[in-house]
Image (cartoon, rainbow, N blue to C red; front, top):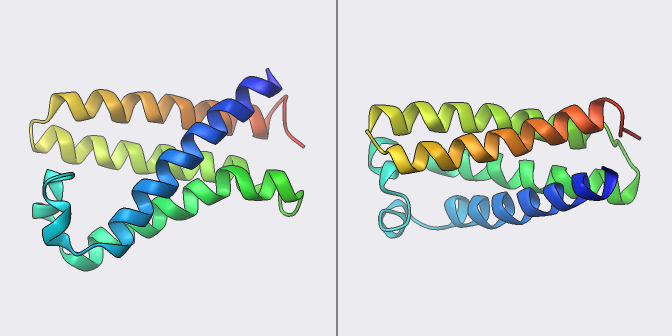
Length: 123
């Protein structure tokens, strides 16, 4: 189970680090093709969402690898799960059903990491 948690953590870390970096650094106009929902938010909000995703992605791996403040890994899982609930709410409002399914899958994976690292497979 520990190996499976590491695999899920690596997947979430890669996904959220790359996605967060893109949202945090690119102008809103260049993001519209990849993320149509950016039309509903200001540039500052999009950057904030990107930074939160980037921090969540880093938090999935870095504390666990370094052994420093390892409680941050399950907290990153909780943060990503909350981010996915909020993202799903945006997609429901925009009637983007396919994106809701992606949010649900990422939510389950993040919640699984939070459960596993807070609980039986923590450090």
